[in-house]
Amino acid sequence: TPPSSHASYIDAAMAAGKGGLQYHGGAVLTRTPHVYFLWYGNWEKSPAIPILTDFVSSLGGSPYYLLNTLPQDAAGRHVPKSISYSGSASDDHSQGDRLDAAGVLKALKAAIRRGALPLDPNGIYFVLTSADVEETSGFCADYCSWHHHAKIAGIDVKYAFVGDPDRCPS
Image 1 (tube, helix red, strand yellow):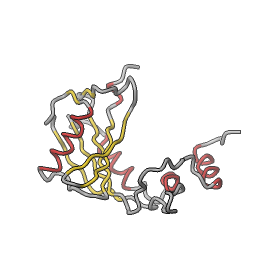
Image 2: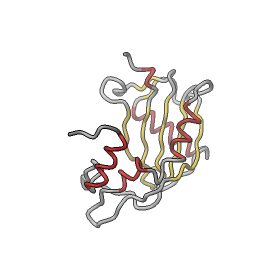
Image 3: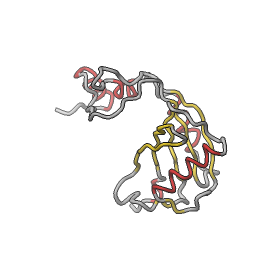
Image 4: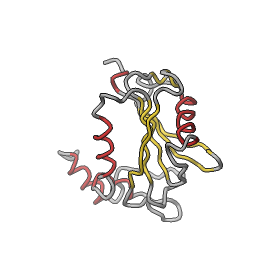
């Protein structure tokens, strides 16, 4: 029987020692990840900035986040039980109001180059687009967000795209 609430799902997953996550052979972050937001587009009237900043700031060590720490890599290393919200930057459409996957990476690289965000080997960068930005490589039709990695100045940078759901037809 499925658990009756989100909290009981977490408890059941933790008791099973899996957390519902399965290791697929890739790299595991073994140091405390530093989370950075790049607010791309027009965020002037959005309540999302303080909400998401507060969410990430209080996420580390929570029962919800601890689900991510249960799986281990082939060497037996776990994901750290903490994360650190480490900053954000704004980008007022430097790559235009239509972005494909390459444009998302270009926006992130530009923020790092201009010093708005640091180049951090322990960083996880979220490029969040406002409702006035269209992501053209499949947002809403094929996915709601995605993550990837790329080399920037020789550093393997982990990053994710998160679009505004107001862009998606109902």
